[in-house]
Amino acid sequence: MIQIVTPLNSRSPDLPGVLRRVIEDEGFSRFWAIGDVKILSNPLLGLLCSIRCPGRVIVQTYDLARALRDAGVPVIGGFHSPMEKECLDFLLRGKQPVVVCPARSITNMRIPSAWRKACAEGRLLILSPFAPKHGRISALLAEKRNRFVSLLADQFFVPYAAPKSKTEQLCLNVLSAGKQVYTFESEKESIIVRAGAMPVTVDRLVSQLTEKLSKPIERNKRSV
Image (cartoon, rainbow, N blue to C red; front, side, top):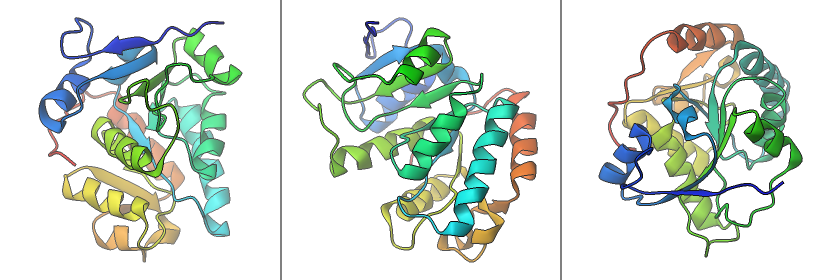
């Protein structure tokens, strides 16, 4: 099946408001999309996790992914680290909207069959701010992608941010921008919790998120 890549810019009549604000305030000027861009009208939970996770986090994160799936919470992320990929597998078995932002151009990108199915069902958006010349993932593109995700997400859940990692620094930037960051209670001694991240149980998080799904979203936080 051929996946249609839709280019978007400030002149696109169907450009979602959140992308228009990213263009106006953050310097991103063009986007490429596969799937329904209307998914961006949902309040999105950003998912971000360091590449290496301690054992105490892994089982909790599986429980989190199942709970988010079953509760229908819309999620956005790069889904590149091993733990993020595992979460995406769980989420794509559900019915809630998901936004995947690869750290490369999506033009000519091979789309996994599970992604194609979710796109066809209108519940997956693949979105990239990178032009066709950026056909390979790089550390620089991953850093820019993570910032892009941080601008689109209304709040974040971070299962684990390794000390002095780029994940930790991004969390600190998100917190300084006034966005809510959650993590597991087992991480209550972490730098991000000391900076303002909220340690929660899975049940409490899902309860708070599903309550927010029923309310109009406000996207007036400062830039990350």
